[in-house]
Length: 92
Image (cartoon, rainbow, N blue to C red; front, side, top):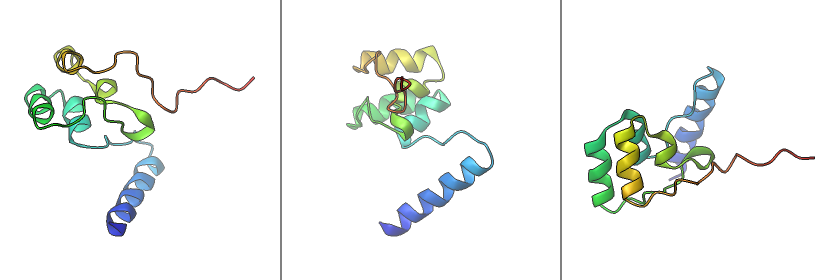
């Protein structure tokens, strides 16, 4: 487990240092980002949470590349009003 965390942190630091957006957190985020409707459906059928939180609190719906992927996620119960965890009001 410690090795996985170290590898994740190293990859995240590398990604951020070269200015790329963070990669998706897990397979359903990856499938949504890729627009892979069949994979999204397969993952949901296997019990993956439709509103699983990824980096910064994004759900798969935040990553949905196509309207078709978004429709599948919404039909499966994704919260269309969910905000990213990092989306906080600015301090006064």
